[in-house]
Image 1 (spheres, rainbow, N blue to C red):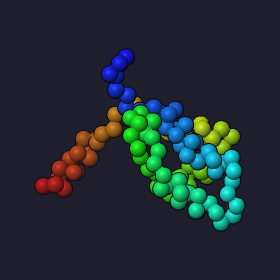
Image 2: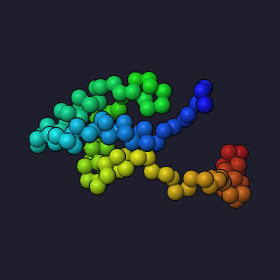
Image 3: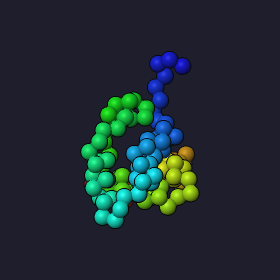
Image 4: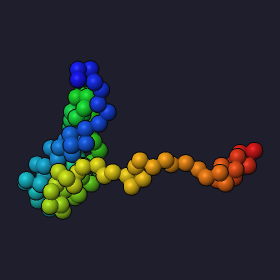
Length: 106
């Protein structure tokens, strides 16, 4: 529907992550060169998969994605965001814990 706002595109994010580190998987850097290639990726602008605005990812983020995808049978699936185990459940404090927090505040 036109004008509809999407907050997220999980597959779009996985494809973006793969687009960033995919060249490293296709042409693995020689020993000692991975850091240089990751620094170059960290300095590059990428397009947000929902808004299209430019964004950057840090060295450590790209490195984490690289090792996650490198060891996976399906790299794109490995780069999808994991669903929280407590998703859909109400997170809150018990009555006893609320009382302890209130007492501490007082």
